[in-house]
Length: 209
Image: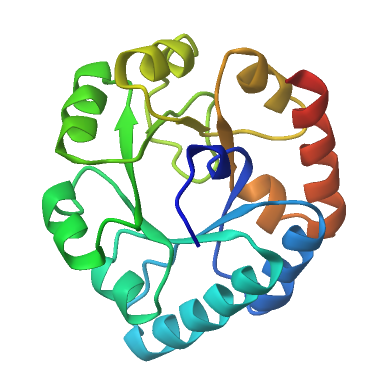
């Protein structure tokens, strides 16, 4: 899949562990989600590799981007489209050397515009700011001002992703604020019907652009 900035847009699903994860990811893809990040902090490397490989193949079927959270080795092993790196997840330069020029490398920048500039200079392809709203996934996270979504793009020239507490009731705010994509966790993967939740989020996003 050729890397185009326009691919990094819209509703961006970040997985939560659940026993039916493959079915849930298939559901959000049917619902119109175009980006999936596999996030699993467990120690079961074999299960994570098997699960990531299956999700990568599923995303290929739907023409969606598949990224792995934190683990560059896992991203390389399953031929993911890229990796998302947090504060302690290793250097962008090292990830680029391992994954190659065609891989997407995203970085968490929290509320730090200087960090965004620095990591884009090192080769990151997109920057994520948040938490934009209080997050049930990371309740300890501080809040980032929504203005960063637009100023981050202007400062780096790269797509910006909003993350943290985003759901169908507020996704229109981050769309209107200039985010290229909205990373959604619980509103998709804690939903009783992930496909319906995805359709609602995608519709709200599209109405607000």
